[in-house]
Length: 326
Image (cartoon, rainbow, N blue to C red; front, side):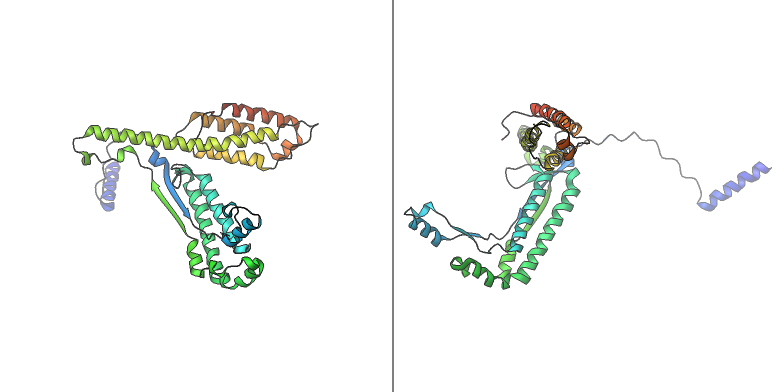
């Protein structure tokens, strides 16, 4: 009787919490692993930056220099910095260069100019770094144009003397508009994006377009890889050269960047190897092994370490592509 009573109590409890027990789902086949595609492993990014050019050609002074030297007037050119080396303008110029440097380090070539390809693994680092630098430059441009620009012509006029030309100084809002920026992300197109319906029954034409597009994409990916090889070669050759001295010879006086430059390129070879090039992976592995635990100071102190590291770097140099990259 106790067993029956307990069973009834269980049934009552089931009724209380909502009735019948839901049936277990039917077993399903395991999901197939997701195959990475170019469009899922990278994106395109276009960065545009503008800045106020303060280096201007002085036509009158150019003619004067040519005339004073009895030369043809198109053989001499005199340029002047119309901001007289203003510190804020210099900083803005430096910030523009820093933005471009970060953009180029985290991306690889795609088009000959403008659009570059950004590996997905670099996206968040790129977005955080580049957008932060852009915001900082924009804020400084605001400060310069709103608070400084209208008050600096007097000292600049004094510094330029007879080279001063008031017509070269537009209003502050015009100068501010010259410091523009544009950052656009876009997916990498693939041959499968062509719409077959547009071609009706012309399957041959569609297939040819897809094949041509695949050739085009492969060339772009090779351009991206070639950029990495092109950057790597002079850096490792320089390392080999700078390490080539014994303890009894005069030091080459290499800087800490001798090591950090190579480590930076190893990171690029890892993240920007969009075609999974085995040779690039192997060379990155060898360089990483050669520099594991190696510091610039240790290389300066130990001739044996310099010799060993140089030998490993030379082996890498021998394996670099020798084709005409560009």
